Image (cartoon, rainbow, N blue to C red; front, side):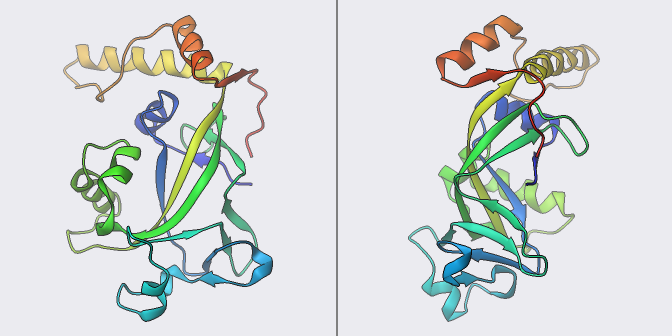
Length: 213
Protein backbone atom coordinates (compact mmCIF):
# COMPACT_ATOMS: atom_id res chain seq x y z
CA UNK A 1 0.00 0.00 0.00
CA UNK A 2 1.48 3.38 -0.96
CA UNK A 3 2.46 6.00 1.57
CA UNK A 4 1.28 9.60 1.36
CA UNK A 5 4.26 11.85 0.74
CA UNK A 6 4.22 15.54 1.62
CA UNK A 7 6.64 18.44 1.30
CA UNK A 8 8.06 19.50 4.69
CA UNK A 9 5.79 22.55 4.81
CA UNK A 10 2.70 20.45 4.11
CA UNK A 11 3.81 17.70 6.48
CA UNK A 12 3.95 20.28 9.26
CA UNK A 13 0.38 21.28 8.39
CA UNK A 14 -0.72 17.64 8.48
CA UNK A 15 0.89 16.91 11.85
CA UNK A 16 -0.33 20.19 13.34
CA UNK A 17 -3.84 19.37 12.04
CA UNK A 18 -4.01 22.40 9.73
CA UNK A 19 -4.35 20.12 6.67
CA UNK A 20 -6.88 17.28 6.32
CA UNK A 21 -7.06 16.96 2.53
CA UNK A 22 -4.55 16.53 -0.27
CA UNK A 23 -4.75 16.29 -4.06
CA UNK A 24 -2.97 14.06 -6.54
CA UNK A 25 -2.91 14.14 -10.36
CA UNK A 26 -4.94 11.51 -12.22
CA UNK A 27 -3.23 8.87 -14.36
CA UNK A 28 -4.55 7.75 -17.73
CA UNK A 29 -5.26 4.20 -16.52
CA UNK A 30 -6.87 5.24 -13.25
CA UNK A 31 -10.42 4.18 -12.44
CA UNK A 32 -12.56 5.45 -9.58
CA UNK A 33 -14.95 2.81 -8.24
CA UNK A 34 -18.20 3.91 -6.63
CA UNK A 35 -18.67 1.07 -4.13
CA UNK A 36 -16.09 -1.60 -4.68
CA UNK A 37 -14.08 -3.27 -7.39
CA UNK A 38 -16.51 -6.18 -7.57
CA UNK A 39 -19.58 -4.17 -8.55
CA UNK A 40 -18.02 -2.91 -11.79
CA UNK A 41 -19.36 0.64 -11.53
CA UNK A 42 -16.54 3.09 -12.13
CA UNK A 43 -15.54 6.34 -13.78
CA UNK A 44 -12.51 7.07 -15.95
CA UNK A 45 -11.69 10.63 -14.85
CA UNK A 46 -8.69 11.12 -17.15
CA UNK A 47 -10.89 10.51 -20.20
CA UNK A 48 -13.72 12.88 -19.28
CA UNK A 49 -14.20 16.52 -20.05
CA UNK A 50 -16.53 18.64 -17.92
CA UNK A 51 -19.13 18.64 -20.69
CA UNK A 52 -19.60 14.91 -21.19
CA UNK A 53 -22.96 13.57 -20.14
CA UNK A 54 -21.64 10.58 -18.19
CA UNK A 55 -19.32 12.77 -16.13
CA UNK A 56 -22.02 15.33 -15.36
CA UNK A 57 -24.50 12.63 -14.34
CA UNK A 58 -22.03 11.59 -11.63
CA UNK A 59 -21.64 15.10 -10.20
CA UNK A 60 -22.83 15.96 -6.72
CA UNK A 61 -23.83 19.48 -5.68
CA UNK A 62 -20.16 20.51 -5.49
CA UNK A 63 -19.26 19.15 -8.96
CA UNK A 64 -17.45 16.24 -7.38
CA UNK A 65 -17.52 12.56 -8.27
CA UNK A 66 -17.31 10.78 -4.93
CA UNK A 67 -15.82 7.28 -5.11
CA UNK A 68 -14.94 4.45 -2.76
CA UNK A 69 -11.56 3.54 -4.21
CA UNK A 70 -9.07 4.41 -6.94
CA UNK A 71 -7.48 1.56 -8.93
CA UNK A 72 -4.85 1.38 -11.66
CA UNK A 73 -6.52 -0.62 -14.45
CA UNK A 74 -3.32 -1.94 -16.05
CA UNK A 75 -1.98 -3.51 -12.87
CA UNK A 76 -5.14 -3.89 -10.80
CA UNK A 77 -3.39 -2.26 -7.86
CA UNK A 78 -5.46 -0.10 -5.53
CA UNK A 79 -4.11 3.43 -5.32
CA UNK A 80 -6.25 4.63 -2.43
CA UNK A 81 -9.33 3.25 -0.69
CA UNK A 82 -11.70 4.70 1.90
CA UNK A 83 -11.37 3.21 5.34
CA UNK A 84 -7.71 2.22 4.96
CA UNK A 85 -4.81 3.80 6.76
CA UNK A 86 -1.59 4.99 5.14
CA UNK A 87 1.83 5.96 6.36
CA UNK A 88 2.76 9.63 5.94
CA UNK A 89 6.31 10.61 4.99
CA UNK A 90 8.00 14.06 4.78
CA UNK A 91 9.28 13.47 1.24
CA UNK A 92 9.97 10.53 -1.06
CA UNK A 93 12.31 7.98 0.44
CA UNK A 94 11.87 9.35 3.96
CA UNK A 95 10.83 7.35 7.02
CA UNK A 96 7.24 7.44 8.19
CA UNK A 97 6.32 9.92 10.91
CA UNK A 98 2.71 8.82 11.43
CA UNK A 99 -0.40 7.35 9.88
CA UNK A 100 -3.69 8.72 8.56
CA UNK A 101 -7.00 7.06 7.72
CA UNK A 102 -8.61 7.97 4.40
CA UNK A 103 -12.32 8.59 4.84
CA UNK A 104 -13.14 10.40 1.60
CA UNK A 105 -12.12 10.24 -2.07
CA UNK A 106 -13.46 12.32 -4.91
CA UNK A 107 -12.57 13.56 -8.38
CA UNK A 108 -13.06 17.22 -9.21
CA UNK A 109 -11.84 19.70 -11.75
CA UNK A 110 -9.24 22.02 -10.30
CA UNK A 111 -11.20 25.25 -10.88
CA UNK A 112 -14.27 23.76 -9.15
CA UNK A 113 -12.40 23.61 -5.84
CA UNK A 114 -14.65 24.94 -3.07
CA UNK A 115 -13.69 27.20 -0.20
CA UNK A 116 -14.07 24.34 2.28
CA UNK A 117 -11.79 22.09 0.21
CA UNK A 118 -9.17 24.84 -0.08
CA UNK A 119 -9.29 25.34 3.70
CA UNK A 120 -8.91 21.59 4.24
CA UNK A 121 -5.89 21.70 1.91
CA UNK A 122 -4.35 24.32 4.20
CA UNK A 123 -5.07 27.45 2.13
CA UNK A 124 -7.07 30.60 2.78
CA UNK A 125 -9.17 30.41 -0.39
CA UNK A 126 -9.57 28.44 -3.65
CA UNK A 127 -7.55 30.97 -5.66
CA UNK A 128 -4.43 30.37 -3.56
CA UNK A 129 -4.76 26.60 -3.92
CA UNK A 130 -5.45 26.70 -7.68
CA UNK A 131 -2.50 28.98 -8.37
CA UNK A 132 -0.12 26.77 -6.40
CA UNK A 133 -1.39 23.60 -8.07
CA UNK A 134 -0.90 25.17 -11.50
CA UNK A 135 2.59 26.38 -10.60
CA UNK A 136 3.61 22.91 -9.36
CA UNK A 137 3.06 21.55 -12.87
CA UNK A 138 4.44 24.68 -14.56
CA UNK A 139 1.08 25.41 -16.17
CA UNK A 140 -0.74 28.66 -16.85
CA UNK A 141 -4.12 29.91 -15.61
CA UNK A 142 -6.03 27.82 -18.19
CA UNK A 143 -4.78 24.54 -16.65
CA UNK A 144 -7.90 22.83 -15.26
CA UNK A 145 -7.29 19.08 -14.85
CA UNK A 146 -9.32 16.55 -12.92
CA UNK A 147 -7.64 15.95 -9.57
CA UNK A 148 -8.04 13.15 -7.05
CA UNK A 149 -8.81 14.65 -3.64
CA UNK A 150 -7.97 12.53 -0.61
CA UNK A 151 -9.70 13.44 2.65
CA UNK A 152 -8.01 12.00 5.72
CA UNK A 153 -7.79 12.05 9.50
CA UNK A 154 -4.54 11.95 11.45
CA UNK A 155 -4.63 8.83 13.62
CA UNK A 156 -1.08 8.17 14.78
CA UNK A 157 2.15 10.06 15.28
CA UNK A 158 5.34 8.20 16.14
CA UNK A 159 8.31 9.37 18.20
CA UNK A 160 10.15 10.21 14.98
CA UNK A 161 7.26 12.49 14.07
CA UNK A 162 7.47 14.35 17.37
CA UNK A 163 11.19 14.91 16.82
CA UNK A 164 10.54 15.98 13.24
CA UNK A 165 8.02 18.64 14.35
CA UNK A 166 10.49 20.19 16.78
CA UNK A 167 13.42 20.05 14.32
CA UNK A 168 11.38 21.57 11.50
CA UNK A 169 10.22 24.50 13.63
CA UNK A 170 13.78 25.12 14.81
CA UNK A 171 15.09 25.09 11.24
CA UNK A 172 12.41 27.59 10.20
CA UNK A 173 13.42 29.89 13.03
CA UNK A 174 17.08 29.68 12.01
CA UNK A 175 16.13 30.52 8.43
CA UNK A 176 14.05 33.48 9.60
CA UNK A 177 17.12 34.82 11.40
CA UNK A 178 18.84 34.73 8.01
CA UNK A 179 16.07 36.74 6.39
CA UNK A 180 13.96 33.81 5.12
CA UNK A 181 10.28 34.10 6.06
CA UNK A 182 9.07 31.02 7.95
CA UNK A 183 5.91 29.28 6.64
CA UNK A 184 2.71 30.58 8.21
CA UNK A 185 1.57 28.68 11.29
CA UNK A 186 4.95 27.27 12.32
CA UNK A 187 5.54 27.61 16.06
CA UNK A 188 8.50 26.53 18.24
CA UNK A 189 6.55 24.05 20.41
CA UNK A 190 8.38 21.58 22.65
CA UNK A 191 8.07 17.82 22.29
CA UNK A 192 6.14 17.38 25.58
CA UNK A 193 3.68 20.07 24.47
CA UNK A 194 3.12 18.33 21.14
CA UNK A 195 2.58 15.07 23.00
CA UNK A 196 -0.07 16.70 25.18
CA UNK A 197 -1.81 18.20 22.16
CA UNK A 198 -2.02 14.85 20.40
CA UNK A 199 -3.30 13.12 23.52
CA UNK A 200 -6.05 15.72 23.87
CA UNK A 201 -7.08 15.09 20.27
CA UNK A 202 -7.03 11.32 20.92
CA UNK A 203 -4.26 10.82 18.40
CA UNK A 204 -2.21 7.77 19.28
CA UNK A 205 1.53 8.18 19.89
CA UNK A 206 3.48 5.05 18.94
CA UNK A 207 7.08 3.88 18.69
CA UNK A 208 9.08 4.76 15.59
CA UNK A 209 8.97 1.23 14.19
CA UNK A 210 5.68 2.14 12.51
CA UNK A 211 5.17 0.43 9.16
CA UNK A 212 5.82 2.67 6.16
CA UNK A 213 3.42 1.06 3.70
